[in-house]
Amino acid sequence: MNKGFLYVGLSYFLWGILPLYWKVLQQVPAFQILCHRIVWSVFFLLCIHLFRQKFGWLKKVLHRPKIFLTFLLSSLLLSSNWFTYIWSVNHAHTIEASLGYFINPLISVLLGVIFLNERPDKWSWLAIGLATVGIFYSIIVFGSVPWIAFILAFSFGLYGLIRKTAVLNSLQGLTLETLILSLPALTLLILFEMDGTGAFGHLTWNLNLVLMTTGIITSVPLLLFASGARQIQLTTVGILQFISPTFQFLIGLIVFRETFTTNRLIGFSFVWLALIIYSVNNIRKRKPRIHTNT
Image (cartoon, rainbow, N blue to C red; front, side):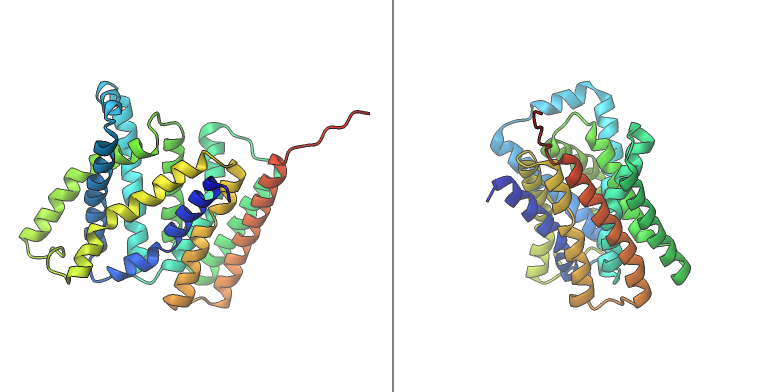
């Protein structure tokens, strides 16, 4: 099996089962989990850089403020995505969170049209239209906007848009983003401890350990993805990305037993049909054509 395929598939699988991880920490407030995720990620990533002894990229950041400002924005988008996802899992909205990642590829297409002047073909527009119908159906039936799905889809879509043109690679970029967020995150954790609401050190030893490993579970899938994505076609990456929301959806439905009515199924079905059309169209476009001499 191609190593790239294995690495990317494993990264999406790990992202897909993250709800199980966050559910273990359900008694810890989502905002504190976010702060721990940031602080322990910085620690883990800096250990990797120390091992590799490669810090030259930091000079580039120090001499080019535009890079810092770019990653300041991306770090805010990333942290809002992380917080929303953790909160949704621990408040019984895992299925709605999965919807956000199901529609994320289509949101990325729209962002490409708006910001990069990309021109989708008719099949991509059909996919976007079907997904829109599914979302509006859900809004009409339930009388509320699926805000969790929208926040997750747009925050990650905008994050991807910014990182698409960023000059730092995945490891460097995530390190800078978590470094930017680490000072306020660490300050908040200290304040939580001072006012008696801090969780770390006041939980069982195994839950404290789970909090400490949030940096590893954050960084490892990204490093696997960054390594594997360079070795396989973009089309393959696009198909494999649906592993993550599929596992999230199944965990919410089967493990957490969240409510999934017939009306919800209808709304999701429009989105799933849209993704099938989108994926098949991308495969067809990238399929090499055979030229014959006549």
